[in-house]
Length: 490
Ligand code: SF4
Image (cartoon, rainbow, N blue to C red; front, side):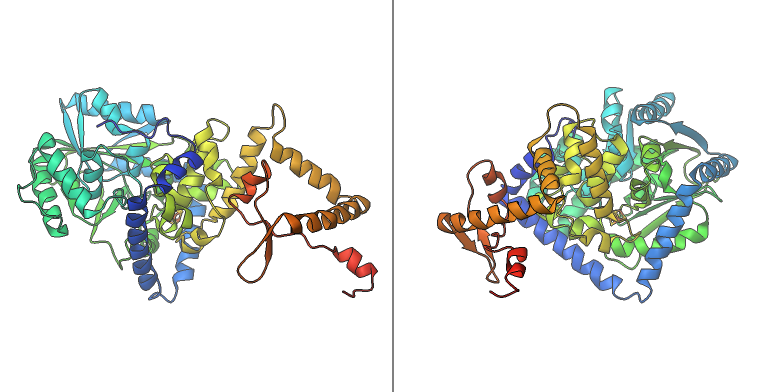
């Protein structure tokens, strides 16, 4: 099971491939529209939704402003309740900590609660290299793992699979990983869930160690919180003797009262429910009850880089609800794999470059352009992350990072436009030229767009790079100034 995002091509290349898969597009359209409608219905029930969004954003902003203090408070609270705290600068340090704990206990298999951050650091692969198997226990993650696949959505990692595909994965792959699927397994959701439940049950009962992430970490009490829908998380958090939680440093919230806001925002924005079926909170070790050894790994892995970015910092407010994915017209058509990361969609388009830095690799630099800037993500975001603003900011940084070497055609075009537009006489000449060009183009061919507007036809290369994908409004035969000089008469 070695699927990895490493080495994925840039977004335009990966998106073209995804767009050719009509089954994928059907699956995505059905799934995103269903979740989108559920979310809209439950959000509409809350009169003070906008106030909740503002409160969520304010709590996160305040926490990020004093992150150093809250993290130390969290560490102190955790240690006071018997939890060992580890600090990890990057993925490698975090994976090493988890592997070391497993080796200390002679463990060669662990169970996992669904966790974005452990996917971000490639924990399963790092553990496999040490001979330790990590079993995903979330149903969608199990489907991805058994299918030797990659997650394509934050909340529903197997959103690109339909029921028939899932049945095939279970029938072909379950036996190699433990209890096989029933002989006569159908593609009914209840039967698929029952097969997964039986398959996972023996893993829960056998596992000595579990690994989780955390949706929130409360600084004042040292409480960690995981919200989920299936109960598998509850099993992982209570049955094994050793529990290791890998937590991004932006997950800290100052007080228990702050959770109140997020536990209203998160379920409505993610699964379209009023509350999550399972909200697990744990505060250190309780003798004789649950895991008797607990570790928390506080992970940076680029978060302090994002924190230092005045505009991009707001991305650290993200509570991973996936509402922005479900409303994004680009995500709906390409799916998550095209983003080449465990964080796909609009939030992935900003979070990945913020965590990794721009100018480092082509794939990451392509992500801020994976958007039409329509703003649907901002409207849907429960913590008001202005994703379009950050996208534009990151595009500037990408351009700045590639200024060396011969200027690109786009840069030459922009410089020329700036030269023309900054002088009235030059602009006048250009307008007269456009008027002549317009008459010529009239002969070459124009198209009439819906609404009666006229557009240029297909231009020869390099203009075809633009006209193949976009409408170019036809220039008017007469400029405003020429019209004005004539006294404003036709
Ligand atoms: S950016 Fe906002 S909408 Fe998107 S996953 Fe994060 S919190 Fe949810």
